[in-house]
Length: 147
Image (cartoon, rainbow, N blue to C red; front, side, top):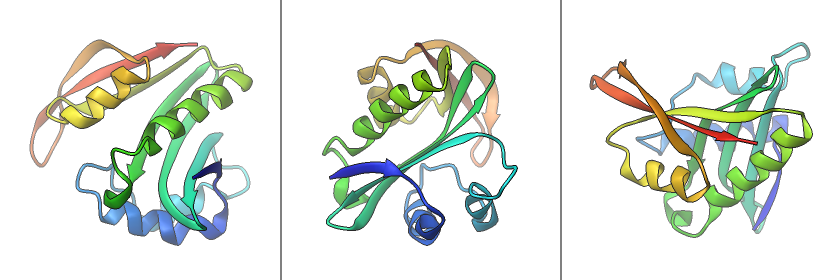
């Protein structure tokens, strides 16, 4: 498995993976295409590929000294094989290189698998947002990692 920066040609595969993941943040295809537009906000877009096929991706936004992990998706067949951990480890390196002081994210309180992943990767709960999510309504756990 290889972790690399995402390219515009990866958008179709990213959209397909996201559509197959019920717990992913669902974005319109235009948002994925917009990641590569000139003048777009600074983002880190990483993909994991295995034998040339994308099996996971991560998107994070960098603003000032903060990095927000916006979406992480791994194909069902590749889950529990370290793909998401490797994507997050690479994000930590890239965010540090870009002078971010911390990485943060929100996650549904009921998403036990994601929460275990984030904690394994060194992120810690820093708070909660009441009724942050809809369909269904649910609180968000706020995680962060100081770099």
